[in-house]
Amino acid sequence: MQSTNVQIEKYHRHLTSFAAEATPLCVPFLDLLKASPEAHLECSCKIIGDIVHPLRFNLWYKNNGESSLNPKIVTFLKHYAQASPLNLSLYQQLVGTDFQYDKVKCTSLGIDARTQSSASRVKLWYIIEHHPEKEAMVLDFPGISPIAQSLKIQPDLLFGFDFGLDGETAVKVYPELHTTQIQQSRSLLNILVGTRTMTLLEQCEWVNFGFTTKEAGLSLHLFPRNPKMFIDNFHYPVLSDAYRLSGTQKVIISLDQAEAESGCYSSFNLYY
Image (tube, rainbow, N blue to C red; front, side, top):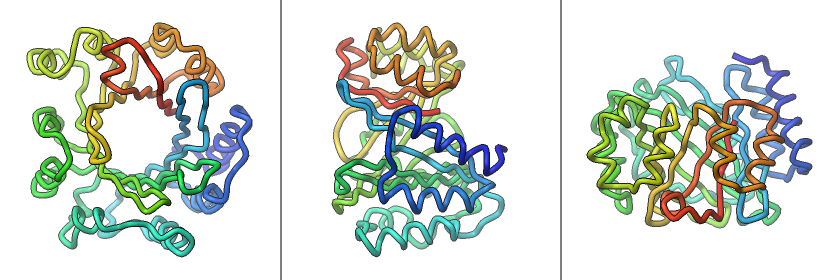
């Protein structure tokens, strides 16, 4: 567990490295970070073409017996609801009143802040385990590809919500496979993805397959064993520069699976 000061330094270093200026959405998030010594800060940037959007942060909280949503997160969400009402309809529909918080391993509160505030998002994710009724609801949620169910092998499941400040909300589901499971599931994966995607998966310790109600298709969230070599093989200078600016060794790279298969890339996400 990193100290609060170390995490605050990481936050500011990320802004400095990417020459970014905090927006109003960052202010309460920094307050939340300062009040959350128990949480882990994850920094991120989104690359679209030659443009880098670096004001992306996630705070990960381990569940230590909470029976409801962390009150610090509730306070943050209420703060934003006052200025930009968040559409909680999908959250209420899926989480409902029967959500068992004792089955939550981690909760994450994140932001994706853009210069145009209406393009910004607040993110709320859960990792649940041994909560079969809710897992079934998540995997069968309207708009989520049925492929997500076939990839649910791990006992836990990451899912969450993107609350757009424009009033749009999306549900996201991320089944995970580790190295041995990728090998064991090769026959299934060969049906779902092509050879270029398999080559990427085989270079990783684990992968989260991302499905969302916002759009069709599949995204890959990859934790490569050799990040520098993995990134260099994309021959995408903006991504390589972002990795260098992150100043870290281990990163998660996400990309669109269709782009991975075509070899023609237009966007990436980097997390560290």
